[in-house]
Image (cartoon, rainbow, N blue to C red; front, side):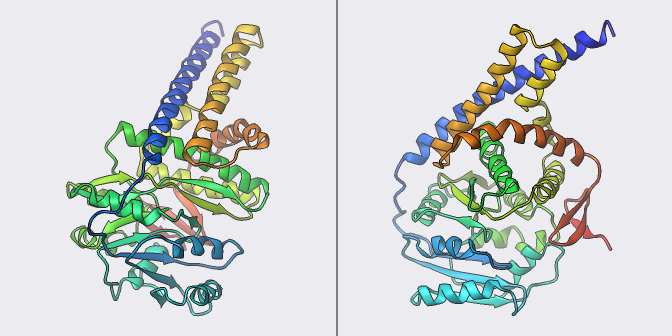
Length: 387
């Protein structure tokens, strides 16, 4: 014990310092990103035609608001392709309402999907069976909301550099219903995912994309082999981006930040969703395991337990938690431009402790639950259904 306890204290102190360094770097990256996003982004001289591909599944009270934001785009040449799996999908009710609200919009509707383990990709493949006449395809999930200049920014960013292959967007979470699971989910998105996504963009060449937005030239998608190459992938957005990157094309993080509308979610649903995300992320980007060592509130608590609750250790723990909260406030307010109440701020350390448990638990096993299906993640980057 005479050697073990000092070693534990040293490890905890090193990881507290590593967490502090991460928070300062993430805050600096957020400042840089916020300055860039504040600049106007004029349309290119010849705006490309855009086709927005939106796979739908189910209908909740948030769906219409999400779809409205895409139909209200300030962009000259756009068309929409919506896809559902079956003719009885409740999402068709929302789609019919959208057609009524926007009678002049160019809307194509498809039903069914192509054979695939990743059903979202199968739906997208069916949507592209008769490709829309567009220079750029913009794929995004149904729970995403965007600003009116979303397409203008994407078009300008794609056109700015010929070798840009994909433009993708980071996102923030907005809670439309006040359940605990939804609040934890939004806290994770806003204070874990977004800061890490922005920091990694500035520190390393980007070889991945986010499902919130994958904007790709039609010609680039064809050159990469089409969606057929990722139809069984558990991270189709990541897998497609890596194929595009392998062509020598650049993946660019857009200055347009979108939001994800988070509906009602129980704590169990939050846990299961984060467990699936953590296992997928570990398979796609093994470097993501580093987050176990930069969870400031967890290591601050461990440091206090190892060193005792004296004033020096309390001061060190307080400093790392303060840095954690400061970085979060800056990211949420300046980058995501979302409100942040005191209760949201107080929830962050609790969420961090829960997430440490999620990440540790996710290390065991390669199976995930996804919309009632049990899937096994394979080393190849694909997945198979567990019978």
